[in-house]
Length: 425
Image (tube, rainbow, N blue to C red; front, side):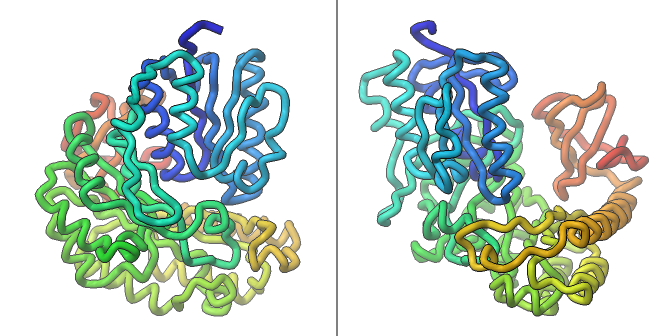
């Protein structure tokens, strides 16, 4: 191996994981190591794993095999939720080190030390512990991203303990980043990016542990001249104060990903979701009072152990009533260590049939929403090129394709037709 090897990151799962990888990547870059794209052949790989479903955990394991096919001599470091859940599944030839969800920036520092990077005390200069809790939250004063949109992690951990979810056991209790640290990073991001995405394991819980709130943060961001998008939200955060704060922002993206999981009240109780379908619907109606053309998207779990045929029918009907712009549809995944993990699972054929039915509704509702975008001028941030067409997202997160475009450039366009998973100019 060369004295200063190339290092690549392979990240699975949520935007928080993506942010963590960006922060680690920045530490390595600052320390003088060569950071390359995951698609390139590298000497060293860091796999940031996911365990939200059994499938995500399987893909995390497969990542090791895939890397060793690319470079049999690669040195692999594993971290994240799947290794926190079960480190032994990654103990194999080629894997040099296994850690969990904590200390990712410390791991990045070790890589700099090991592979000949800077040794001048740089780590203490660029990393602060911005949290005064038992589970400290390492904060890097900037990240290095391969994407156009800049993710900003403002919160970690979760106190909700939904009965199907293993994440709180792996990520720990909810803890919030200081508002000053967030504002500092966004100010830095404005020099290179056109949009920031505020993200967290439970974004809606931001500030509860430090005497502030997500609404307060949005109010503090009202002078920012950059598009601001929110990650996944919980019903409880939606109220008039929150929506007033969002409305007062210069370039707020009216896309609300509001987690539902089921449209049946009994299943919601079993899931420990702490709201009813009616309460959820009322919050969607409130969003549409403030943002009439907002995209409201959601997550739906089909085949939860207590979901009867009638309950699934209720969920299907409720999703149609809401009229989501899009839905992420997942089959239930039993996770050992959770409350629901003790329950017998439903027959796979029944779950698959429910997934087909809910996915068909997803496509129907998505088509209806995208048809409403045709003929209207929309501001698009172009990000990538796919099959000869530039592709980007409107503020409401509708995907827009165009013959004309430029990476990291914003343009006003008028979509005229449906195209693939989006619309086309």
